[in-house]
Length: 184
Image (cartoon, rainbow, N blue to C red):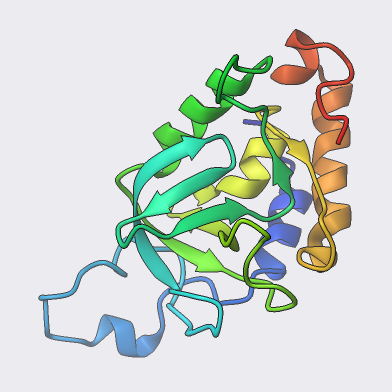
């Protein structure tokens, strides 16, 4: 995964919930709920959905299922398909996603312009203690930048820049697949 420091700083500055633990998190003596101890954010409520959740299943490179059965589609990302005959780099994208988030409690960040897509999936950015999977999929060449208005507008340029860098370096699908792999 190659992501320059500027892209990381920009990605973190645009996140809807604050990164890091708050003072009240660290002085709690109740050890019964440790789910936020490993998370990079302090959970913030959203009208769209949960601020943290357990990912129980990775469906493909850009979609996961949460413990309650809710499907989440990643904002600003389009990974090659894996259903039917898998598209070029689709299986690699799904595995990368699976290795990163499956079985993990993640932070979910929303763009409240539109909480769900036409398939009733939540639209979100997902983050673990290791980073944000949306931007990592694009910067590592496992997915394409994909903006579907109105959600994700504030980070569209960031994702397009990550994709341009991956293309320039022939990273992932950009070095392995036909040039039209991301034609939408």
